[in-house]
Length: 420
Image (tube, rainbow, N blue to C red; front, side, top):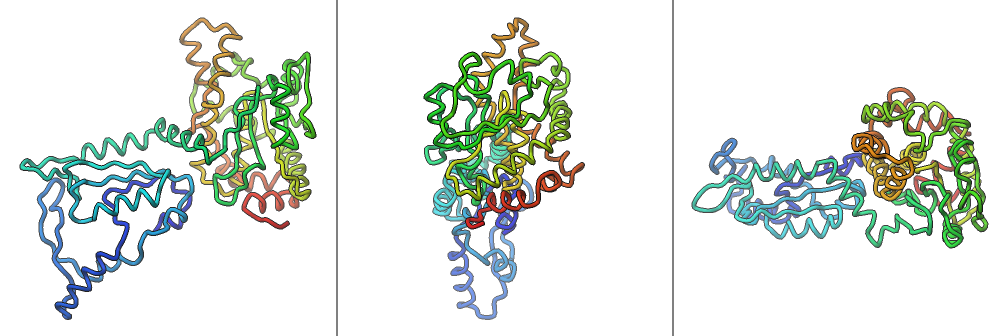
């Protein structure tokens, strides 16, 4: 099955899909037993779009090509973040309804499930009047693939108890773990967040349980204006944790407060975000090399804690650095784009405070600012496309900018190597 081989596939639509093949194998064997010379059997097929069911002779070799394997255990072979829509007709006489239940058990939280009452295998009503439910199915598929509902499902999955992705830290926004998006990418190694200006003493103690190094991507003006860790006038320390200042732009204030200078660029949608992100990509090399150097040393030290990467909002600069780590760890690109958009959930309160701080009283301007502070998956999509077109892909981009030994240590760790 193609889906088993390509872990980049982010969505699957399963309409009346079989799960167990044994019942069909037994049926074929029964026919062959009754008539050893039989080469096929008559089966019911839909006659064209919207047509009636007709009898059609199907060769056994054609049927056998569809019965090579059961789908038991397929969930473990799929992209762990795949989203699957499964739709069955409640009066399906071709695929047993028990297969629907088996799909639910197999896919679990990966799936969205719909049962159409009074519909047959081809989604036509089994009543005195022949009703075509296919337009309803098409509408459900469109809704399933709508970007907003895709992100809602992705976010909901990250908030499940077993996920432990969003870890509450007192006074810290947008703090989450990058681990677990592929079976081999370790949890607890790389975290991301907004800046630490509101971190409390309690939050610092909480954070020290998870973090050994904090990498601050902000420029010098941003640090001077907003401080390092905790309130600017009363900075605090995170116990047994080192802050490393690795600005991507040394003197450029890239914070959301400097909105006016970037408003027009971001108003251009995804391409506007890409225009801004190209500057980050161009200047990121030295920052990335230092992060890799320290992370490689941390891995070799067998330290049980990880690193935190942040800028001001934890959206743009942090988003690009984290996307690179996820690419290096073999995470599917669609998952990386959805992870980037999670920042919209992590920054809900931050956006409202920003609007209040800069005293926006114009609705049109407020909308533009909210769009600029957004983190739509499409913006990361075009950024990854740019990396492929201009730099040979995200992994090659990293390889060209960091020490080969550091690259190898981090690469192997993000892909599940236990012993280095």
